[in-house]
Image 1 (spheres, rainbow, N blue to C red):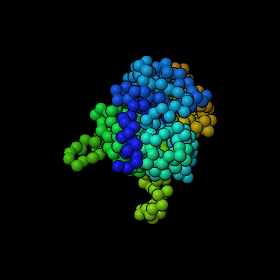
Image 2 (cartoon, rainbow, N blue to C red):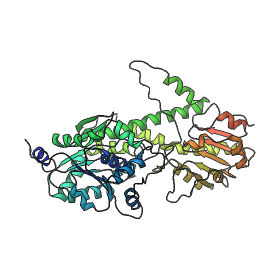
Image 3 (cartoon, rainbow, N blue to C red):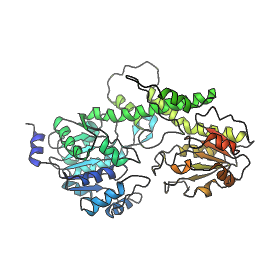
Length: 475
């Protein structure tokens, strides 16, 4: 029996858990751990900073700091907090009390082109864990990370801070989150969980941690590096699929046809061995994951120091897909210019109402929203820009209104960047009256409005992938 397995067997089952990082991943994970009869106590660790410290008191009152539509989350937090099974704290020294600690901390890229991630927050979290873990503690990285990080940088920092040896004195694993805002609890319970330890004992201990919170999902064990690649690859592939439909949408516009007709036709082919994962085009890809996970995968190959056999001089297919998706807010800008030109107007001096700041519908998640580069382009062109979002309460440097009528009033252009439910209910006649223009412009980046209805009401319509309507006759 190896040293670690012997230590873990002597320590017994995992009863107390620490979760570092109270965000979109850490909060629902902590609540679900706390709701399980297998565990006695969950401590959520959150720095008491001016920007995030408010989460501590909110959670300890049984409230969710995450707004938007998250079914069941606030009720579950309230239940486990009142039941004495979940507590949030800024006292990281209490990590010494837990049997297992997970880290769910963002890992962005300051400049994706140089493939150097900003691991500052993650490194600080790892250091905090390392200072207080003891023999037999399980440490799990849930953050999306460059392949090689768990067994490399993370292991090194933990060993330096603790004076212990990973794989001998404590267990270390990677178990990447696989959640989408709007369905956080369900995703954690129902999605299969990838778990990869630096050795078998670490993997087994991590499997023990996650199995109790699964319902229909299963735990899939593998090595730490394979788990890291799995997470970065699945987001990279999704980004690639979105880029494919976005490029097809641009092609359909150029050929004067409706991309949604084409999508329906392609998607209709069913049968054994047929896989056509047709997603939907849109105004851009946002969020924390898809906008940077491709670069983690690319960096993983780079730092592996092994030879990559790939067509010489050819760009990475995955990076090209990123560039296509990054272009879509620019395309929204180009559609806006084209639409205004039809009523003999330019962007300079025009009032543009952006509908939707969150990157995904019916959520308050405004990390890396495509609305931001679109807004920047408009401001550079001399536009007056106003923003509406029913879920995003605030955003640095951007005034966000929660009253739709105030935002669209007097606007020359309404541009839909997010498919919030509220926008599907807009009435063309009422919107035109508020905008008070003979030919107001609507640019639909999410296929939200009925093109014919708005054209019939006198709007100049532009929509992504709507080559059949973008050159319509003026009513």
